[in-house]
Length: 252
Image (cartoon, rainbow, N blue to C red; front, side, top):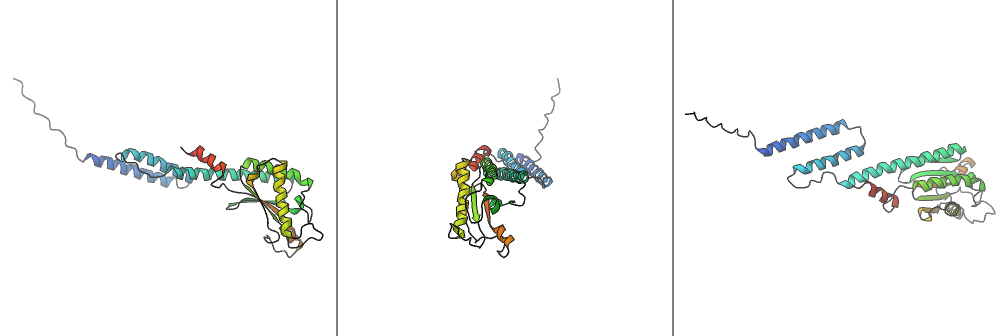
C-alpha cells in the first residue's frame, strides 16, 4: 500500500490584506512628494496637473469613494492664466516692433508691467493732435491703423484716456482742458470704430484733463509729457468672450 502523504499546511498571511493596500498607498504618496521636490523649479501649471493626476490615481484606492484632491477648475484657471500671459506678451512684442519700425521711440512708450491696469501704450500729443485741438492729424493715421490691427488680434477690451497739462490754450473751442482731453479720447475711439471697423463694444473713452499728470507741470518739457493719450489693453474679465472660449477649450 502506498503511504499517505501528509497534507501541507497552507501558509498563513503575515499581515492583513488591507495593510498591503495601505503600504502601497504610503509608497505612492512618498514617491509623489519626492517627485514634487524634484520639480520645485518647474512651472506651477505642471505641478497643478500632477495633482490632478494623483487625484485620478487615488480614485481606485478609496473603496469606491471619490476623493477630491485637486478640482478641475483649479487646473483650468492656471492654464488660462498662462495663456493670457502669452497673449499679453505677444501684444507687447507687436507694439514694440511697430514703434521701432516707425522710429517713434521718443514719442510712444509701452508699459510692459502687466498689472491690474493691463498693458499701457502712451502716445505723445505731437503725434496725434495740434495744440488745443482734438482733430486727429492725417499723419497719425498709419500709426492708428497699425494699433487697430493689434487691437483686433488681441481680442481685448481697450480703454482710451486723454490727458492735458495745466495750461488753458487761448482761443480754443473747448472751455476746459477736461473737455479737450475727453474729445481727443472720443475721436481716437471713433477712428478705430468708423475708419477701421472695430467693435465699438470693446472701447471705453475717458478724459482726465490736467488732473492726472505723470510729472509736475513746472517746465515746458514736463507739460509736454503730460499732454498725451493712453491706450490700455485690459486683462480678461469674467464676461469676456475670449475667457469663455478659453474655458471651453481647456475644460475636460
